[in-house]
Length: 72
Length: 197
Image 1: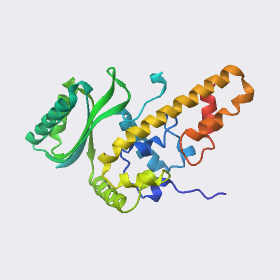
Image 2 (image 1 turned 90 degrees about the horizontal axis):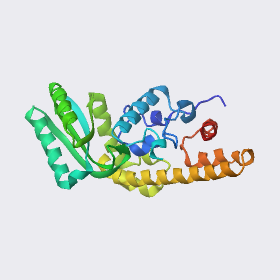
Image 3 (image 1 turned 30 degrees about the vertical axis):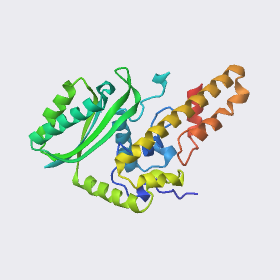
Image 4 (image 1 turned 180 degrees about the vertical axis):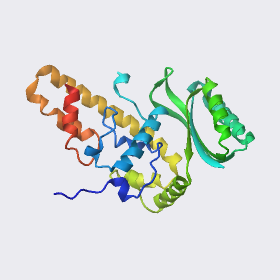
């Protein structure tokens, strides 16, 4: 299997990932709140960049956690 | 004229009244400086992902406007000085993004979009609303995720307390289930294991 599956955002032809789409963004975070590397998620470079800025913005306005450790 | 969006997180102690007043004030400020409000989306009280100034909840308001860039500096300054504002974020949209957002709205009305691809079908209904409306559901989703995490971690701790190596092999599986729903979970198991230790 050499053929790589295209990234989900590419299928959707997305040019913008909104930081308010919390549900989508959570999918690309580990249960500890880290951003999933694209080698695991299969997201392309372009969309991974959008994803990271979106996640970081969402973190700033407390829609997403920086880490789940701090709660405990 | 440039297109902006600002998300503002307000102190929960303001109550509904103060929250609306505060946002109206911000709106007025923008309008006075030559901005034109395009959208005003008030989510209301929502759980924060982490504590800010000892608050675990906050009032969220999202404003979208078209206006001159000179306004932003002053607005930012104003928001920064206001102690009732826990967080704010102002973002500039370029024209491509605006076009795309419209398109997404139209698309999601006709068929379920990316958001709900592998979730239950009953969620599709929510997605027909514009963005603001499905956030109430998001809060619930967020809570659930949080609870699941806790459970998993408790299990892991217990397991670690009893015996080391035998059951350690089970941990990655458990975590992989609840963890990131990434399609290729190959590497994530390793990652989880590493962090548990």
